[in-house]
Amino acid sequence: MAKKLTPWIMAILAIVVFLNFYPLVFFNIYTHSLPYGIYIKTSGDPERGSYAATCLTPEIAQYGIEKGYLAHGRQCTSGTVMVLKVIEGLPGDHYSVENGFFEINGVSYNVLPKDSQGRPLRAFYGQNQGVVEKGKYILLSNFIKNSWDSRYWGPVGIQFLVKPLWIFDHHEK
Image 1: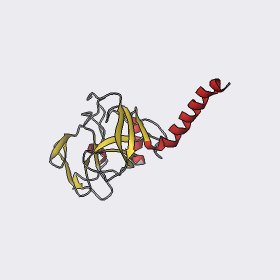
Image 2: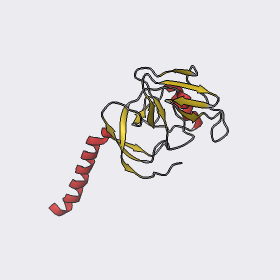
Image 3: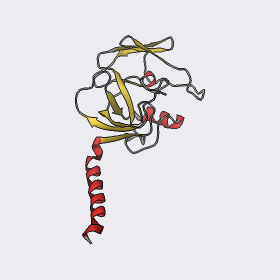
Image 4: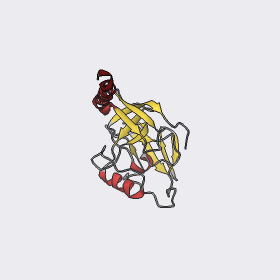
């Protein structure tokens, strides 16, 4: 009898352990902005090059859902999954948008007028240049060239930092 119960006890124990640590684990199976995989929440101060997870404002999130850029989900109050990006701009950094380029810290990124389906891309920032405010960050993707990111949203807050625990797909898109 004990041998029959052992696999069930182990399975229940594994589920309890997983659920206990679930708030620390983030599964990226929705966004191409970073490699698909399992990410773990980390502590520390945001730095350039850190991976961050964020929920977008309701207005930006709704636009993302309508265009198919964001998946529905329960991670954010807007009804979407979180987005994962790389921090490229910190509070106090200057950014500008002109002539089809978003520039931050001397690095330029293409700002596309249309998405891959030929639809116009909307910019949500109110000005073409500025300084990243305290508590806001420039989040970009260095994994996919036509990412929908701070080139279109402007500076955004972050929920937490993540680092890869296990990557399923590491090829640039």
